[in-house]
Length: 161
Image (cartoon, rainbow, N blue to C red; front, side, top):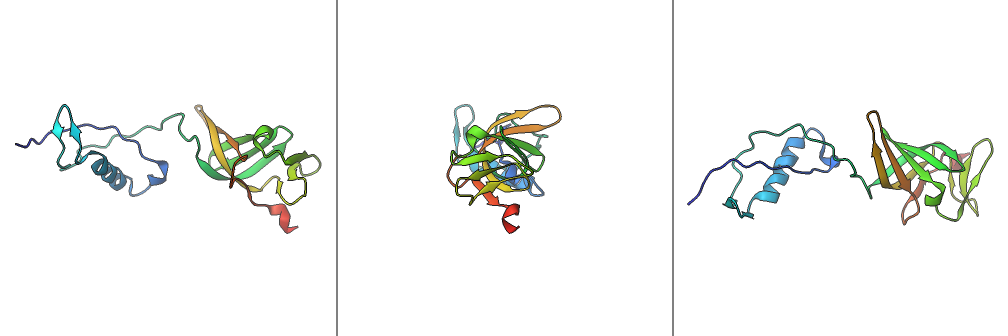
């Protein structure tokens, strides 16, 4: 015996799927997550025959932790540096910069390794990991770190000069 019923489901979708094929990705994920499962209330879900409505969706606060981003440094000071990745502003504290990097003041403040081989300054591109977020009415602000494997400077505009 089979029944055709309407079920409602809230789903999470990674932002990388946002775009022109969002609906297709959402329906595909729904089918993968639900078809073939057993619900105590409704029994075995054999197949999804259609999707009636997809709501507007919400951005979940507190997500983004551990996300790896590439960002452009906008300001460097003795407390750390600020970088931007699209609309997101990220602060990396000097405590979250590798211990072998020292702050250098001057015309172009920067963090430099003791041998001078790596330099973080304004307009440097860095790969960092998000470890904290804050969302207010007008902006998203993050705390990041470069004190981990495979993080740090990926393009230094000062290296060419």
